[in-house]
Image (tube, rainbow, N blue to C red; front, side):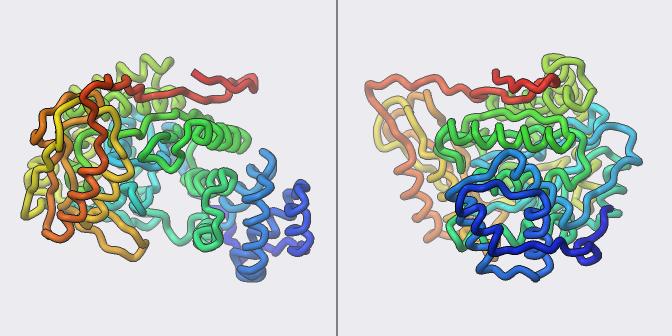
Amino acid sequence: MNESPENQTPVPISMLEVIRKKRDGKVLSRVEIEGLVQGYTTGAIPDYQVSAWLMAVMLRGLTRAETSDLTDSMLRSGDVLDLSELAARKVDKHSTGGVGDKTSLILAPLVAAAGLNVPMISGRGLGHTGGTLDKLESIPGFNVNLSVSEFRSVLKTCGCAMIGQTSEIAPSDRKLYALRDVTGTVESPYLICASIMSKKLAEGIDALVLDVKTGSGAFMKKEEDAVFLAELMVETGEQMGKTMVALITDMNQPLGMHVGNSLEVVESLEVLRGGGPQDLKELCLELAAWMLHLGGAASTVEDGKSISMGLLESGEAWEKFRQMVALQGGDVGVIDDPGRLPHSKYELDIGSLKSGTIVAIDCEAIGMACVALGGGREKKEDSVDPAVGIVLHHKIGDRVAAGEPLCTIHHNSQPRAERATQLLLGSYDISETSPALKQSLIHRVIRIAREGHRGTG
């Protein structure tokens, strides 16, 4: 662990001068950025001054060097895990969030089964996107609040562990994010980059694979915005000594067929057994392949894909997930028999209003329908019902007949089901004449070659 911020000597800066410099588009020094982060974390710099600085960043942006310095300062505002006693390389994946995105539940045990360590610190769902921690907590008894020593012990035993952010990790990020949330500065790609990377790099990892979503169910609706953020995060991570790659992936429709916490655990277990929906399996194999390649467990991405497929088909990845669940206090009986996971009292089919081909889906509306059912949060303090959700029967490109079920709502409340029904009926674009465009799951790959040139594929 590094020295805690309370014990660090504050860096003296003029906050007024820092605000003025960024307002005028000038470049801040590393000392100024360190002083700002330290001062705000310890309470020496007030909200109103940092609010002014955040808005200046929103309007003026940051240079790559400033972004790297901000990330590093936020990272070192709290504890940085030292996992050097673990011999294998430490690799993680981060997704910018989407609907039905349960890849973390599959990737952590899959990559660990290949011999790497996956120390995964995840978040909860907010808005239309689901959260890994909420999915895991639908497994009775699963503890996402391990201490650092417990986290290290689980990692050492089975090679993967999945927990939430502790109070000691990047405390400056929690304060800054809360302020961004009420000052209209959440959308800044530079601040998003520093927020994500400061938490991920605190895990003590060697390499990181980024899954940056784009489309109707993503925070970055436009692909050019997703690419800009991905490039920023890859460059920042590389500058801080990590091996990085980013995949720009499609979120114009939910990933897989299940949306909702325990429903997504069921689907994850299907993939871990070698089955599951094709799109979910394809993306997991691609992400796992890159994790294995960057971690040195596969000489090429294609080799990584072959290794990953073998671990799914053999059941080794499923066994690794079961072991992690046991070590984190979860009921392994539900892993053996997913029918024992929380399930809703009622089911309701949502029929198509007309015949034709599904040409588009409002993915965000699907996510909000799950929130309406109680399966997600509109506010951070909201509770989540693990049993509710949506099972899709058709996706883009499928032909449907009038009255044929598009999806099934799993619910525990009739009023909530009615709200979700209205959202779902409005989320499908069905055409009697227009052909559906083929959806490419992986749009491009972004990385920096060792000689320093950016590559895209």
